[in-house]
Amino acid sequence: MTSQTQASSAGLKWIVSDAIVMTKRNLLKYVRVPSLFLFSTIQPVMFVLLFAFVFGGAIDIPGINYLDFLMPGIFIQTSLFGSQNTGVGLADDMNKGMIDRFRSLPMSRSAVLAGRTISDSIRNLFVVILMSVVGYIIGFRFAGSFIESAGALLLVALFGSAFSWISATIGLAVKDVEVAQTAGFLWVFPLTFASSAFVPVETMPTWLQAFAEINPVTVAIDTVRALVLDQPVGNNIWIMLAWIAAILMVFVPLAVDRYRKAV
Amino acid sequence: MAIIELSKIKKSYGDVRALDGVTLSIEEGTIYGLLGPNGAGKTTAVRVLTTLLKPDSGTATVAGFDVVSQANELRSVIGLAGQYAAVDENLTGYENLEMVGRLYRLGATFSKNRAGELIEQFDLVEAADRPVRTYSGGMRRRLDLGAALVAKPPVLFLDEPTTGLDPRSRLALWAFIEQLVSEGTTLLLTTQYLEEADRLADRIGVIDDGKIIAEGTADELKTQTGGDVIEVRIGSEDNLETARGILATIGTDIPRVRRGDRRIQVPVDGPGRVAEAVRQLDAAGVKIEDFSLRRPTLDDAFLTLTGHGTDEIVTGKPPKKRRRRPGRNVT
View 1 (cartoon, each protein chain N blue to C red):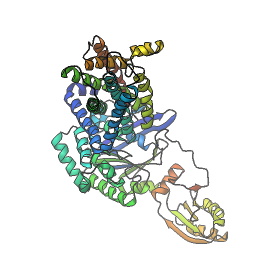
View 2 (view 1 turned 90 degrees about the vertical axis):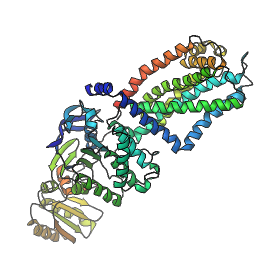
View 3 (view 1 turned 120 degrees about the vertical axis):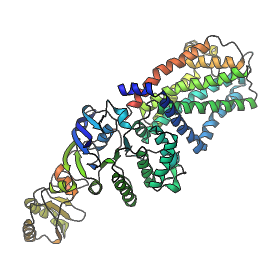
View 4 (view 1 turned 90 degrees about the horizontal axis):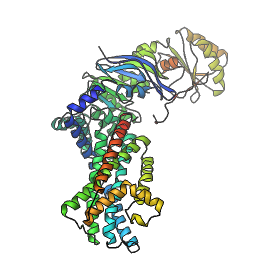
């Protein structure tokens, strides 16, 4: 324990440097396997088009163009789904012996996890920017200022990175790529759909409304939506940031602990 | 001076005891071979020494650093090549080595230069800028070994470095390992191949069921079998049982029978037994196709020490129940 405390006080520089090396390693994968990047981008773009054209006509939200309502929801959905790659990637590293190698090196104990969550967040950010472009083509518009719009997309990526740490904890616990994949969607799916992502919460049955209203995903979407539609954000942004902080405070130590004990 | 020391190390997975009080001392600048069948505890020992696994009890040090309380310091003086070639498929060979250098915190320039050196040393120049997924198994192992050497660590751990390699790649890897140790590195090598331990190791520890059951040079271990070995190949499978019975009374241990080529081996206490064996086999009407008296091999030593062989061997008694590590597929 003493050696770890010393290392963390002496070497913040090294912790950052290790995380950068790991982030670069993970991002290189997308460069080396372009088809992976292509297909993981097609899915969210497809969601935009499907929801906009299939549900767009049926769902009527007074005073708002459905596409403008929908896009913030799909942004958050994309970053949540994307965050599940973190656990899958770690399970894969574990099975291929990479985690053993990293754990035998004098590198920081958090770097492998930080590298994963950062690279997945960068990817998420790239994908939501691309989705905005596709949305723009079919009529979506940011109503707010550039700062509000950019801030909205950054919040989306930040929210996803918090969920990456949950995914990391799960991936290191289940240790299997396919299980990590299935286990990830198991909790992300209901969280995303029982939220204000696609329809206003008021249209849901009362019991579901109760859940949807406290769902952090709803809070995040409402914040991002307010920024995108140039409406008052209110307290939502603080509640969203509190959720992000709370998730990080619980899951960063849990994931690092899992990593330390990974067999 | 001992550079790796284990004292009464125990480690269990649930109620399976992987290491059952291992005490071991390895001299600086030597190759130590940890020899044993699958599930004997070899990998667990390496994982404890490389800080991947905390022992349940006992102490272990590498280069003076305790595996538990000084894990971080210890990691900067070791190199590990595990059972899987732990290299990133999507990076090039060069990028893999450079990344490991950066993670040893050797700095950008040093890491780049060192990666270049190792690429040359391990004969990967032409493949250096190709993603590793295009590499053959032998190339991956070489790169993996290179990655373990990035920091020029004084102590190196190789866990079954040649398992799964074809004979040619194995010979090539052995040559690399021999060259390496001539430069002063201390190496702990695990293997299930007797030939590998015999060829590479200065000293060998035989591990079985989580215990070191014998230790010494290859020659010392061979001598422990108690002398020479009679090997008989008989004419007909029908006589196999008769012949086995006869040799059992002559030998100092239970004969080993290889049904496939009708071969029986038994250790004896001296050349004087040869005449007796031939006479008795002849009297029983067993046709002898081939008969030899030879020095014991490590395989014989292993059989004598553990009571079971390293491959499928039919002996007079049922094979001992093997304990296996659960979970991971250790091949």
